[in-house]
Image (cartoon, rainbow, N blue to C red; front, side):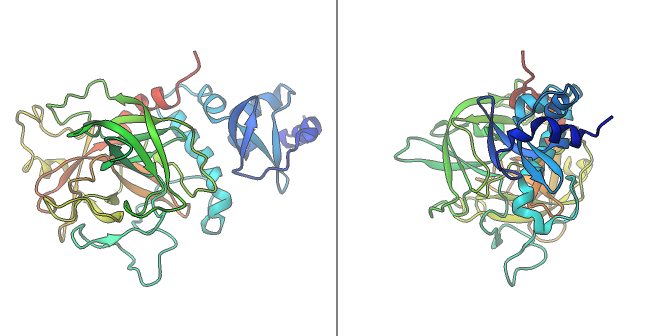
Length: 374
């Protein structure tokens, strides 16, 4: 039997469009991404049926096909996390052409490192140990970061953060849906400094809001939401990239929090995106600070919440960081895996804060962001 690669060459050589890996393509009227054949289940299925997937070109001798992400990937899987895992691999392919000089592997994997590559000259190996007088992120260091805006287009107030996880969805905290001036209205991506326009900035209007069905604004549980924005983001050449989802409960002991939040309790949001190293705090230790009460009737829940802070110093998130991520780098890729979402805390930098655990909600996220076809 002929190998898949040879079958493709024999059957679809006339379909070559001279596109390259990670280019945006069109497939049957739908937007797709040029990825390796082995990472597009629908294309593999067509080849086995001796039909013609749309070919973008070749990476050496490996076929690159136009893969329409939602329909080509989602319907292959049924177990929780399967969709998100495969989507992450596809997005990883999108990154290859831009990040190839940093890659040492072709499969995404999480790592406990808290550094990113490359770092600006003179920057420390580890970021500052606290947000107060902390360390600025550099432009697009965290390419999935989203800024959430409220109010009218003439007077947008940026109050929360979020994380891009697909071409159309941002993951954030449920309590960020509604602020003191109304419902979240805008999403801005590619932002480094709030008050300075960048060629990387992309602004969208919020189209649909998906609050977790078990969220109660009077409680501190299930603090997670999805925002769908109008239009569809083209990742390259903007430098904006989605983050992957953590699929299991086990997470590293050290990770990074990012946001434009205040650098002192009670201050305004910070103009430049900040980053801070945080350490995982055992939930039992955190229970001493957050005891069962009106907003935490069951106390902290280890399955769906993460407690984190700084063992030394005042590392923490603060007002304005809500909805933003805690994350680890996917080694060498300039992409990240989302571990949690900034939820709530007390007196910034004094005690640990609490984060919504992403892995607990993967099935719910998949059902909205990548729903199977009816």
